[in-house]
Image (cartoon, rainbow, N blue to C red):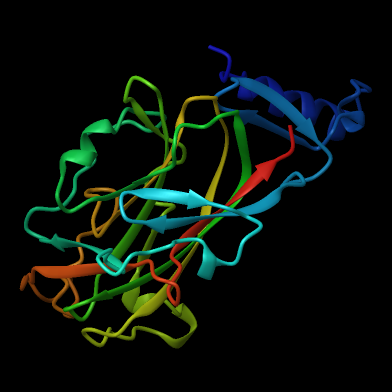
Length: 265
């Protein structure tokens, strides 16, 4: 397996040099060693993250649209009949569940069948795109509840429909009542639009030609994060659950997007 490394050997080699003073050349190697999925190869770098171009992919109904050189106001070309948001019903009693108990890459193609998961796909890529480094998601969201969890997942969709996760579950989630953690817990006002910033996402993957870039949004992914009751009451003291309609806005004034670090190739 290409990705496998002998971690003990790496640690012992480092200790041999810095503790036992053995001249094994480890201090002359580049300090960053990372694995690139898609091309399945290890790379070395002088620093992390490597230099990349932040490229925005904007949400629009049923797809992602990417144009890094245009203003978001010119990106959508929305018709009057096109909704300015996508919505789903989130039920804490029937959460989106992770069918896999183990970590690593898994095929999540079946999530598109759930009505409480929004899926945004790019068109099939005309050339390979490498994404390496930290990822940001800026999502404009509103709901008819006082709290919810916002999950944003990045997947690589193969031509045959397989869809593989590109990071461990748990990185791409924000509990909206703690959207500004420095100010403590602040509940949502139903109907108000909030900009959620998810900044803990990270990966290194080459989306090969003819693959699609997929972003999925949901309000749960159990059991990788405790269920949000959506009632505004803490789950440690209450069992009251509330169904909620969640709106993800993607109009000119609310350009929900993911910003991917695209490497030059």
